[in-house]
Length: 115
Image 1 (spheres, rainbow, N blue to C red):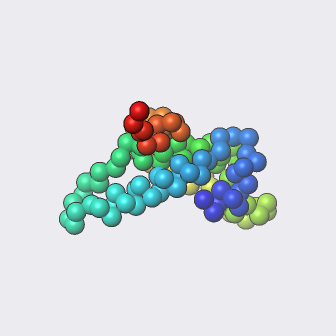
Image 2: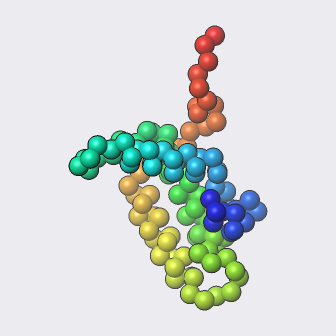
């Protein structure tokens, strides 16, 4: 989230990160890891958290690919291109582990109401 602000995410023409979904993904993944029984290798993650994680990583990939994001947004070149490419490769590899679902819509994340 901090890097989104530093890298001017709001002004990006490529897909912007949805800060709320990114925060939900981070929180949901952290809670799932925390709730994992000791000694278990399996972590159960809610489908919405997986979708928010995928949507966030896809937007991040697009921004890296377009050169909108950088590990150092100072504007000067001092080795960050190689770092940015390594991050892009790592994020692409992470995306291979996630199902290709679309992110939940705003309506699907609201609690149901009776009536």
